[in-house]
Length: 197
Image (tube, rainbow, N blue to C red):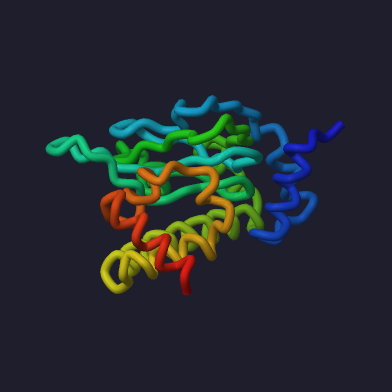
């Protein structure tokens, strides 16, 4: 019997990479269920990322800890129905500069890097999945870099609300301030301005 977690994953794979039923069956044995408790980690800074996860439920943040200031800088939030990995570390099998932490009790289905490589060799559908995963993460990173260069903090806040409407109720204001690159009092002012518009 197929679990509800696997049903959600299969639906995502069909939509994301147009995988056929045969492609999906090829990978059935490789996806493993994993629970990560709130404040536990999918990946540690300075470790090699060896998995791609599909977030069934829960929420993660990707952040960088500056060793000089010991300040955390939030880069991304990854909620349910999204893929989670540190792509450069996964592709190069070199250490990752980021930490990936669960902000809520979370459930994932994870697949190992070497299993993905086997799937790429067997199926054009899975090759397409790998390409789309790389493109998605490239777009994430490019959009993030551009937003920090081009947008005001208020524009970044509005974009965050559009992309993840419920995030404000799930993430501390401190984490949101860090993501926006501002201090707490500035976020309070921005929130008030957005509400009044």
